[in-house]
Image 1: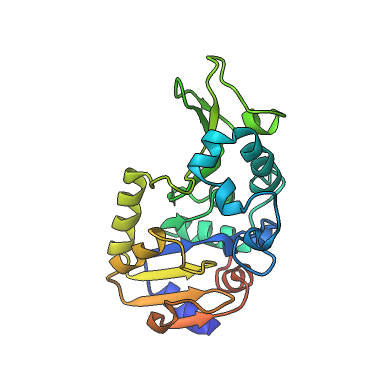
Image 2: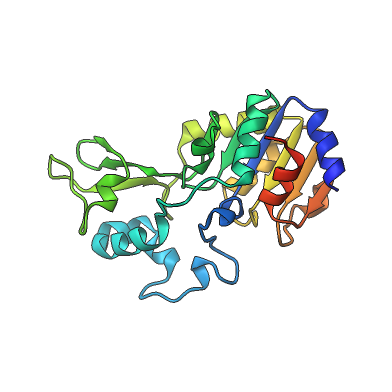
Length: 238
């Protein structure tokens, strides 16, 4: 399988990577839906409720208590998967990373063209004056972070009940539709509308790297169950 993947990568100069939480688990960031994921842990409120727009508006303090504790991991570093993808972009083979992750690790590894479908914990903005703040505005606050104008600072992440950014969606779909190889990694493909973007792929090869089965396995030319960092780290020489 590894040799097959290596050959596919060698033969292509138009690859797009579509990734989810499983890409960052090897960096110590927990995923959501696995046995040990956030959605299987017990909190005062269900994580899906806490990470909703209405909860943020009505219970902002409770939101931030959870968000600081579980959604921010400033000590996390890119793993072999992130570095391998950055290397492929450097070689001119990878045209874009489309990610559902909000941790910024792709950029930290060196990737330039990253479409963050669900935003980033590294960016925050004032809901009143729209001034932007970096992550320290949240991490250094022990209460609800406030802007100098008095407005509430909100993470620039897409919460439940919120729509994706139109510009990001347009660029991601465009990249996927033009790719000849689509590598899908670390995602259950259960989160929509993001998972639906794969329907725009018109290329020839689909590679699926995920520990568990997905609804897309039957369409893939190669399915590998090993950790993504292990796979890409071995196939791509950085």
